[in-house]
Length: 355
Image 1 (cartoon, rainbow, N blue to C red):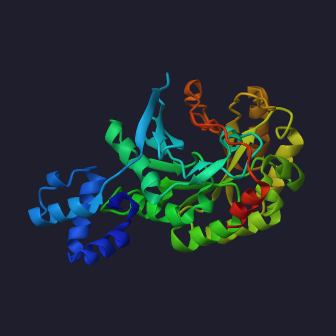
Image 2 (cartoon, rainbow, N blue to C red; image 1 turned 30 degrees about the vertical axis):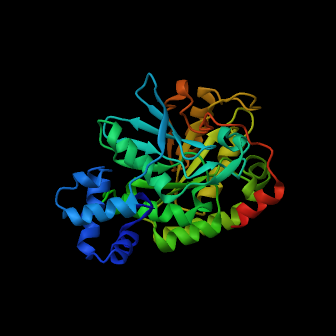
Image 3 (cartoon, one colour; image 1 turned 90 degrees about the vertical axis):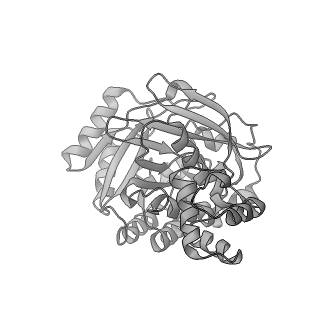
């Protein structure tokens, strides 16, 4: 049976054409499924009974199943979502005074193995389908009282290695008949997969965040291994290319603060020089520890000093407030309660990076 969560507006129109139905019926169902979060065709009251019966026989509305629901002291809420018999992913809702942000996953695990990231240590299992990606927003919209005003693809996985499924999900987020979010309020985060940046720019440009984490190639090669394939010179050029169609006039540069590793004054000065080559805003992220990690979080005073150097150079800098770390929902902690699959083949890893 066809899972309607797998289909953006164009896909749903094609499916309805196969059923011999008119295009406006597809728009009706799109609104029922995504605006009203309805999964039962029998309750779609403005559809003819014959169509409801036809849909029930040929399709379904199937989101991941919730196997864990945890609330942090600060109001952050994390769901563990089962996507198949072996894999689970996590989504996190972060309530704030003027907005509600949902952080969603794009893959079960991650192939890129960034040194400081808990998810990367889990290993890579598979890409999520469009239904499994948009299903996280669909479920969260049903479960939280606050409005979800922002979506960030900063959960498990590298979104730009799964664009065949990510782009239809993004289109649903932006569609006025679905979630109606602004392109400025949907952010895709990447470790720097340049072919994916180019494709996203051409097919569905939304706000872009780059997981930078180092101001030079030598250090970034260690912390973010994909840098060995797409070094900083190429990455900065790709960022400038993306800005030609981006909904914002800057790229957000994410920078996790690692004590004694990338948080020295000289690193800040290198970042200032890098920022002269691309319009950017810096988001400093206190490192969130996980078991067996070699890294420590930079001291608050060191982060403050680092930010001060950037700000004195005229750069826009924010320091991310750590949210949900008591339930392992903070940045870099999304590993999921799933089996450890760190024994990956280098051949498989390279194949995924080249995709």
